[in-house]
Length: 323
Ligand code: FPP
Ligand code: MG
Ligand code: MG
Image (cartoon, rainbow, N blue to C red):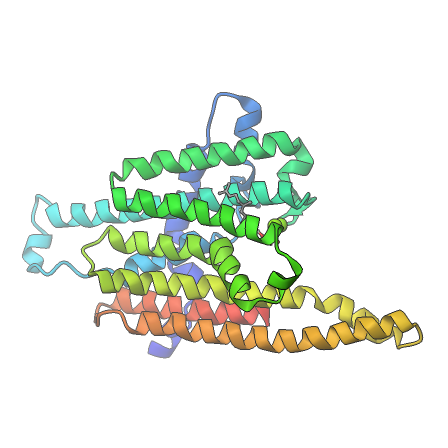
């Protein structure tokens, strides 16, 4: 029985909660100006909401950190329902973090597609290609402002600062990428820093925010942050390396009649080493993410155990997806 439970799909564990969360996201981006409403709501429409990877991680983290209320069960069943209400209120606040994170993520994608002049996103037309750069930029700004309305409602200064810093990181990472010099391109430290800002800061600090909403110790909040950081970093190096595979395959197929292809092949060799290194790096971060979960305070609660296992399984899913 345990073995079967361990193989539960991490996404299915929280899918019941993700569906109302998606509905709330849709209602949060409503506005009276029709073009703005359709632009801001574009990636929350049915079929293009994405996997909602971040909300899933954050809700799993919320349960993984859940300390069962240590009161006699008779109190839990008391007519006042005080403890259950507290638990529900906490969960609602943690869901808000998931909503904020998703809105910031989509805002960054809208701006990214403008910067990259992208035609498609999530298998459909990008918003900029459909409605133009101007509306796409405004819609991104609008999503950010709505995210901060939800953030303010939590009335937690530490989390406000944390999320404001995340937005700064996204902008910093994107700017670092845009302005990379040829020396910086070969600089691993620069690359990792950029990767952290661009892809890991949002999920790691959101995991931390989930923990800050509870009565956790600073150590536990750091472990939540560590998990998110390593999970966020796993994907990036591999995806970039593997993106380069198709061209390499083509060169090999053509043979080496054309001298230019020899240069390309040398390029391939360099990159293939890079691919192995990227794989090793991804594995290292996967292990560190798992280590953070394993270091959390012991807990026998079945839901907690299951969510922790799901967070561990997610690292394997991310690695497999990019192999
Ligand atoms: C995708 O990268 C882009 C990001 C993960 C971050 C983009 C950040 C900004 C544009 C800064 C502005 C931020 C906000 C919050 C408005 P990619 O182009 O490498 O990948 P993809 O296009 O294939 O997803
Ligand atoms: Mg892009
Ligand atoms: Mg980009």
